[in-house]
Length: 101
Image 1 (tube, rainbow, N blue to C red):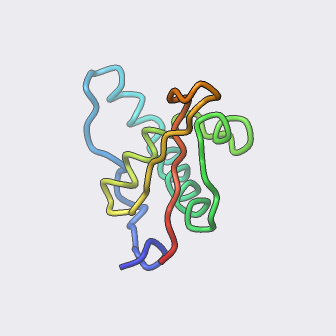
Image 2 (cartoon, rainbow, N blue to C red; image 1 turned 90 degrees about the vertical axis):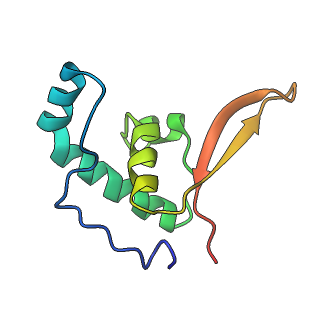
């Protein structure tokens, strides 16, 4: 099943548990926002946008891209990851994308 065919029930919680009570409360208070961000990230990736943390924050106002990526991967979205290297050949940052088949 391709990413565009994958149906995700956005009425369900994005993820069920956090690792501490403060984060658990934050998840509960923001579950609708996080679901919306997941749907938005999935749509961007399906439309060929290659996302980085900086791009997500500055252009799309998504402040926790790695968490949204993890949520989407746990729902079966085939997101790929590529390390971008700096001019010295060292890892600089990660780029997330979906390869169209």
